[in-house]
Amino acid sequence: MAKWGEGDPRWIVEERADATNVNNWHWTERDVTGWSTDKLKELLLGLRVEGPEGSCEVTDIPNLDGEASINNRKGKLIYFYEWNVKATWTGTSKTGIKYKGNIEVPNLSDENDMDDLDISVSLCKDEPNTTLTELMKKEGAKKVRAALGSYVDHLKSEFTQGMILPTANGVASKPQPTQTKVKVDKTQIGSSVSAPSPSTGVKIPTCKFSLKETFLTSPDELYRTFINQDMVQAFTHAAAVVDGDKGGKFQLLEGSVNGEFLELVPDEKIVMKWRFKTWPCEHYATITLNMKDRGNETELKVEFKGVPTVEEDRTKEGWKRHYFEAIKQTFGFGARLY
Image 1: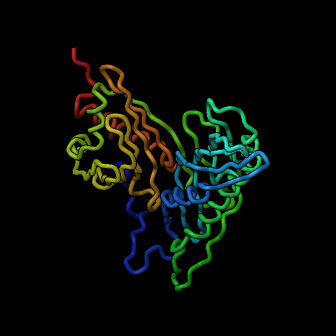
Image 2: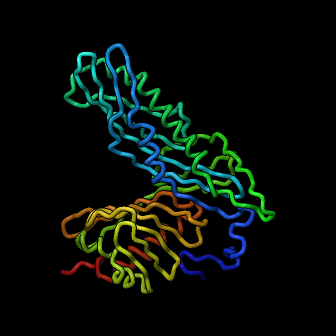
Image 3: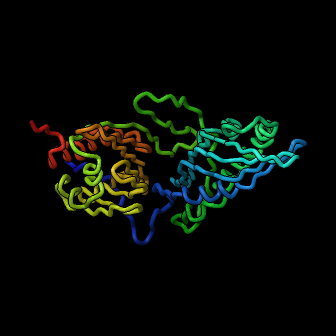
């Protein structure tokens, strides 16, 4: 029986030194989250509208929460992006009085058309009422929607260089544009599944779910268990490579699992990108570990996002067995002493 994260070697296509990704058959992925963050700020900051009552301008982007990637499979480019955008606007009346407000777009996603975006414009608390709010809601929201549409256009035109490789005959196939996706009900009960669009036919169906477990230890000890190489090797009973800093990479279970630490909040939170080696090339799930001090024990909530749907059960069981149970048995975090 194959180890956790391994597959039958008969079904694994090895990379070839003379022709990587021949005919663009394999799944390739490019992470464009950093580029997207810069592009969204470039398009939104300084956005300005004017009216008889004064002018309004987007002056800050305090929060851009999300991710974006471009995928290629069989010569088709699949664009994935999901953002929660929060911006600050400043209004100046004709008499020189300044006002501040907020803009929020919680659903900038490849699953939504531009016309379906929820653009919320509000005035900051304790600010007096002003007609500039209505100006921003009407004209400002139009410009915000146009700027976000421009981001998607740039994503599909500027950042695809090298995604479509030459085929076996030396000719690069033209990327086949994706079509409008079929909308799906986003209601989540326990776990949710993102259905692939029938028009593209190649996007990996992924799911979201969460697990909870309680450990009889302190948050700082549990936190160290996941980022300390010696402790990881202890509970996995195998050699591991773990760089426990932000941006540090890890590999464990004889290479069956690898990833990178994206965010580290000591004793509270760990965010990592994580994958089995048998998943499509360069496809990672995002896993967030939140630790809560419950007195004599620590509650751990693990949130999974982007796990291939067909791997949901195996991922859940693997984490329960190779992380939760193994940690408790190795360090005694599951036993009460009387």
